[in-house]
Image (tube, rainbow, N blue to C red; front, side, top):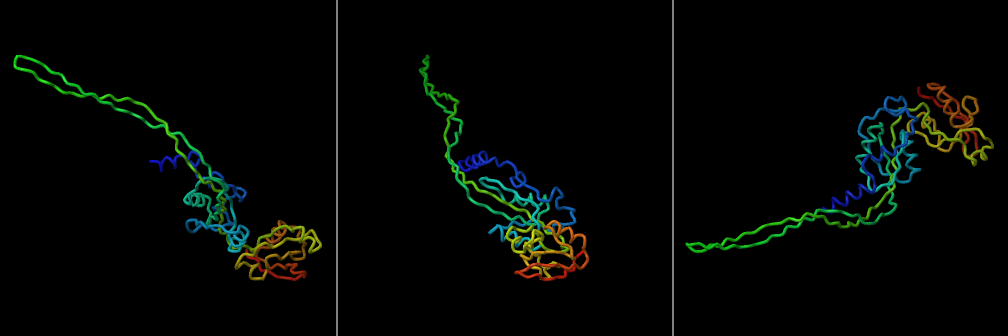
Amino acid sequence: MHKYIIILIALILTGCVTNPYREYYTDHTGGMGVLNNPIFANPQKDPTIMRGGDPHDDWKNMTRNGYIIIGQSDFNIASASDSDAIIHARNIGADIVLLYINYTDTQSGSMPLTLPDNRTSSSYGSATAFGPAGSATVFGSSYTTTYGTRTTYIPYNIRRYDYHASFWARANPPAFGAKFDDLSDAQRQQIQSNKGAAILTVVNGSPAFQSDILDGDIIRNINGVDVTNALHCVDIICQNRGKTISLSIFRNGETIQKEVQLRE
């Protein structure tokens, strides 16, 4: 009995009546979604949950293996089920849920619980009757029920956790196969220029991988066109899909040249 009461208290305190992964979800696809999106490969099986470690390393490993983050859910609650994460991942077309759970605090207190308190009393009596043939004694009893309630207080201790879930979908084979970022202040000082795009990660097996493009490389120009920033770099690559492009790359204090055959 008390077990179910504690569960009820936890549900009341946390408001866990809907799927928190759906309720607190933030989309990263710009509303395009995954299903029937040419960027993504349609999921071939049910989503998988993976426990996260170091967020930075996890992000790089997921990216290297050809996955793109499509959204995330963040909330603080007593408990969230893995099945809810799988359901939401399936609905949005995710292949992998990367899940981080960290204990935050314990909420303690007591909650009043009113229960029925019905009491039944009985009384006994006898009566004797006299007649020409003698006497007879009859015994009897009666019952009275008094209806009422009583209130008891149930103590509770609810442990709460921060949940962070990132949802990932496998991308179709990329034209180039790298994640770009704008230059940091340190990189601008290093190359003595405001222009360029930094390579964050290279996708395994991609054209960039096969051409030995490395994490940390800075792309200065493509086909002789100076690269302004990360978005400009992506635009140039998209315009040359299926072609061979020439890259001028800054690496370890030197400028090197690379050629990459892009996919369609």
